[in-house]
Image 1 (cartoon, helix red, strand yellow):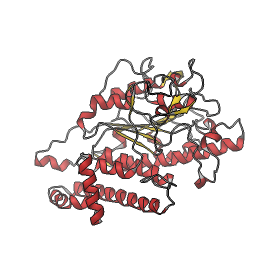
Image 2 (image 1 turned 90 degrees about the vertical axis):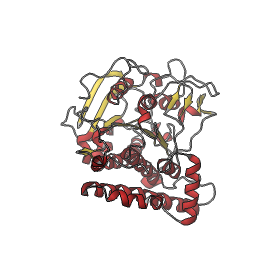
Image 3 (image 1 turned 180 degrees about the vertical axis):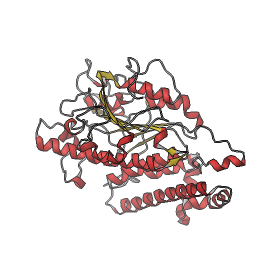
Image 4 (image 1 turned 60 degrees about the horizontal axis):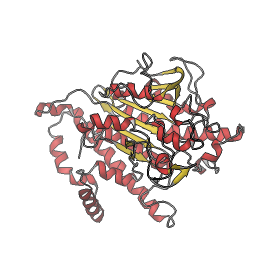
Length: 425
């Protein structure tokens, strides 16, 4: 089992070097009610509007970025299909070829560029997660392949990286030896014996604990407790899912959406904490998702509501959905901030992008996108501010800045026109 950084092991001959940086990209669908998203003031003296209020406890670690755009998500002569283009362009900055066939093509996504250049330092080059059962073929949006709409990570221009949507499978991937066959065998053995993954490393953990200083002993105990807590929660959702009527929820998928989202966020925290990977992406729901939110008292579909026609009641419901998504994201950011690493936290070493490829869903606008950048990127980002860049500044410019901080230096990415000098630092 991979472990977090434990400095006291240095006395045993292990060198503790500079702390690694991490990058994650979170996608939410159908845009946002921008009036309740955008702060009214620039700089550090801004008030978080209602959608962003859940971030108040971590406000000093949040950079609200206004003005960024994805021109390649616009039709540019290709007609309808904004939801497919929004997802496909979000991390690639490239125009998706309009096709519902197998000849899909868009571009390599920023997470995969980083993973290709820097991913050999960890067991997994990258981690891709999602909450919607994906589709890789067929027509989903006005003549665009479903591959565009259900994937935001692209290893090559023609090969998306489908997100793992089942928490159990993601857990087994992170806490196995890395061989899928071994993972399946280990899981079967544990289930038959009703044993935790920790049972198989318990003796090793005890021996290691004797070599650690008091601080690292506490850190190891907290880490193992977090792993077991996550494992228990996954087990509980599996029991609930098994009790539901057949075909109501895909096997292995939690029935409660909020629980599903938080399990995935917790998996990312642990993956960063034990350095299993330094790059992750998470598509909370595919663009065009028509999920209802009965937990919020909203029976209407999300996509239907996004075409609000300036109806105030519909816009209010959109804002409630946006805030619910933000509450889950704020949970993730708090977890990163609470997880200590070196003299700071995981969040200090991270760059977390949260946003959508659409601004106002009614207009299918792809400019002035709702985008957050959380974390300090190893001390290279001055957060706790609201900044506004020039109108229609490509979001790809932000990605170039992030790539620099991950040690990946490119002259161009997607439709970039340069970097963002002086904006982040």
